[in-house]
Image (cartoon, rainbow, N blue to C red; front, top):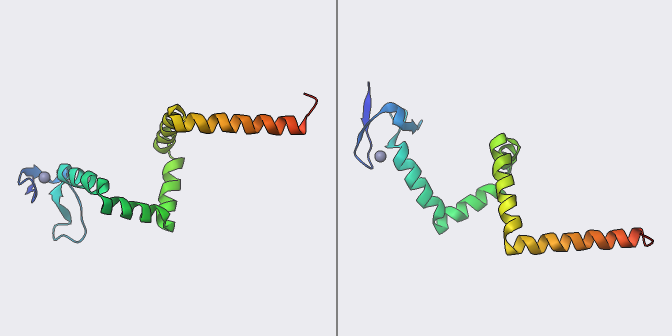
Length: 114
Ligand SMILES: [Zn+2]
C-alpha cells in the first residue's frame, strides 16, 4: 500500500487519507484529511474565514451551491433542525407569536363577522 507523509502532523498515512489537490505534483493534498478538517474548522471560525464565507454565500456561485444543498436530503434535514432550534429560541418564539397575530388581524379584517 502506498503511503505519504502529512506535512502537518508528520504521520505516514495511506494515500486514501489525503484529499485531491491538482496543483500538487502527485495530485494529492500535502496535509492529511484530519489535518485539513481541523485547519478548515479553525479557519471558518476566525474573523477572516467568516468574512470570506459570507462573501462566498452572497456570490452567484455560493448562492447556487446553497440552493442545491437546501434541496438535497441532507440540506433539508439541516434546515428542519435549524428551523426547530430557531422556533425554540426566545427570538423565534416572538416571531411566531407576531406572525400568528398578523394572521389573526388579517382574518378579522377580511371576515369581520367571524
Ligand atoms: Zn496530518
